[in-house]
Amino acid sequence: MTGRDPSVYDHVRVPGGSGASVSDDADTDLAPGVYRVVGTADSSVTLLRVGDADGHRVNTGEVATVDRDALTGFEPADNPDGNRPLGEKARRFAESVVWNLRAFVAGLLARPALAVVALALVVVGHQGHRVLSVPESWLTAVYFLGVFAVVYLGARG
Image (tube, rainbow, N blue to C red; front, side, top):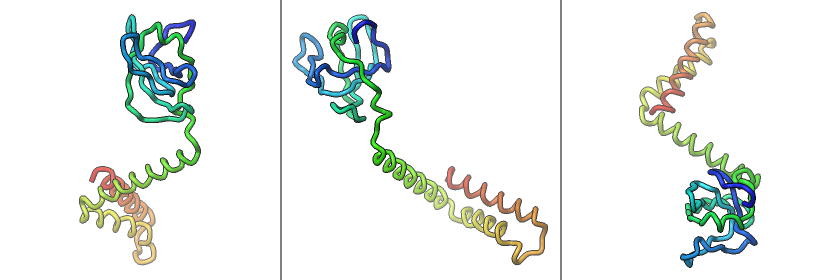
């Protein structure tokens, strides 16, 4: 971080990939990796470890305070949030879809009678033209009412 003062959200890497002393009077070392500046003071900087030694995102919760003078030896680093492997991104997306679907179904199951009525409105609005002799606009209105009811119940429970 030579040449300028650190600011919140800057990213730095421990120099040389090895541990660095947190402060002169401490025998604790920083683990190799990428750190985000999360706080600044007159004589120190607070860092959160957000990346491993290879620059991949980690969620460690490790927070350290470093003397400003010691920070000048650190190297600038890229934000590790944007460099996740494609497989990990796909896995996390699939997990998110599964959890959202589970929450939606749980919302419907919280009020089963209303959920059945809402789903019945969707079916009648979609397939009603085969059995009922009513204007198509009515069936469209019933269909959308049912869809909105299902969405509301799934989201609100």
